[in-house]
Image (cartoon, rainbow, N blue to C red; front, side, top):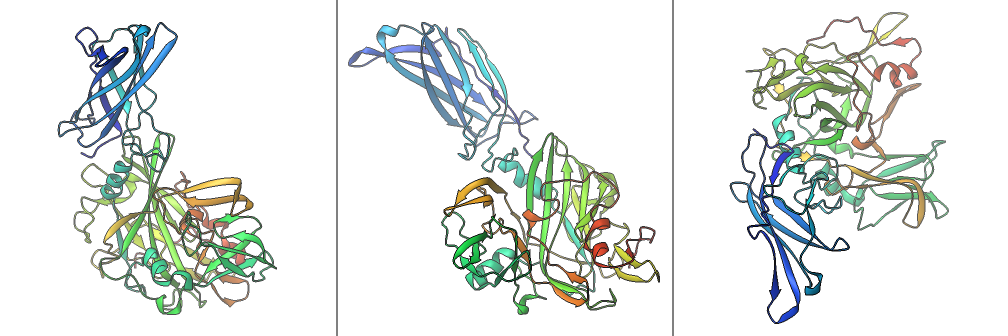
Length: 501
């Protein structure tokens, strides 16, 4: 069983047996030191000791009801989850003995990344024997309300399998980190104003936000735009070099990115994949020669407070749909196989299976209806996703080598950054990727038909669903997205059966 956030802290403080006492300081008769001892046990829900956790304990000594001093101590739990901690203060002898004292566990300031971060739990009193504390411990460097160790455990426990269609022109998943590292400041990033006119840009060299995607833009030397913030509305567009369009990352460097956040009693676990190209010009997938650079897609698993999957959002084409965990397909490992795959989650089947649409990369639950657009006059299919649900078919996959934390963003509003007051400005948190705050589209888009533009996707943190979860089981987003807005007499037909090619 993986560790949970709920731990028990047992403080045994025996005043009468010398666990809290004062002693004169050698050679200093005017002062006296008081010390408190804490026996700390850090346990998981199964009662097993948790080793290697740093516990912070403090004791407040009150003298005569008007004077007080706080002593702080810390210790690291051993293999049994046990730590022995002392906290002491030195006060003038004439203060006398403490008349009252309190025990608590240190709650660090968010961002300081202390090892144990409990709720506000305190014990007060003059005499305590076997004072017992039950607290929530968090090693929460990013401040999202989920223990950092637990984030890694959750990401690994539910790590998905991505099924691939034989038509897909992308050989492998791409690596956005390598893309930025390899091309750096040589990347072309265009900026357009609301009227579609290009705006000159300037590279920002910032120790806080060191990404080559951090640029400024403006006219006549006046800065009006920041790629990590907002001053006036504008569109940033990152070009992907032509030679990368139908490539992927080399073996050993293929990640699946994850992002975790908490709202209320639920934890949301997202898996993101990145590919260099969306290309529908082949295999008669559409009557239009449509393509665009860049493709970010993701699924989100909604977990209960006990980390049990409840629902899943599958995303594609700026929309998606929701399925209950019982409707999704799971396996006991993330091995690239159909063997052992079952419909419905249980404690032995924790790895989600996802089916990827050929060249369009929308994500699907098995046997679910695929995305189609029909002309309402001729009823001709203008576009259809192709998804291989058949285990006896090509049986292809998008393998990955590791899971990589996207982190999150810190947003300030009406704040001064680079000498300018921005409506908002974003920067990565302690785990956040340096490129995550980029407020633009990833890749150029291509136009072949009047009124039709295949836009490249936004960055993950700017995408629909970054920190929102749709509860509906019907499709969301697609019925009002750019497909319907861009065509005359085009409807999304919900009556087509699953494609299952």
